[in-house]
Image 1 (cartoon, rainbow, N blue to C red):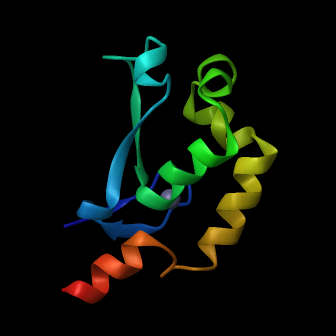
Image 2: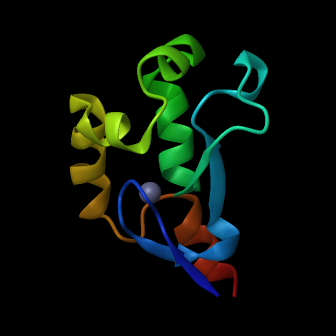
Length: 93
Ligand SMILES: [Zn+2]
């Protein structure tokens, strides 16, 4: 089964997807909205932004997609379909 990442738009095995909490869980986001992203994008969001930034400024899919640093990452990773954890997952099968 495959899923499409809401950020980079790559289609990857469902096992390479994760739910990104729009408001980090320990910042009060438990039970609130999540988006489905690939593991690479999920990791990248937490490298780019602090939990406070995610909670205060980037708590919707729209605001994430509008952020310049997210856009730069998405453009970069889109050209690398096989980049990251998902590539490893594919090879193992
Ligand atoms: Zn992605």
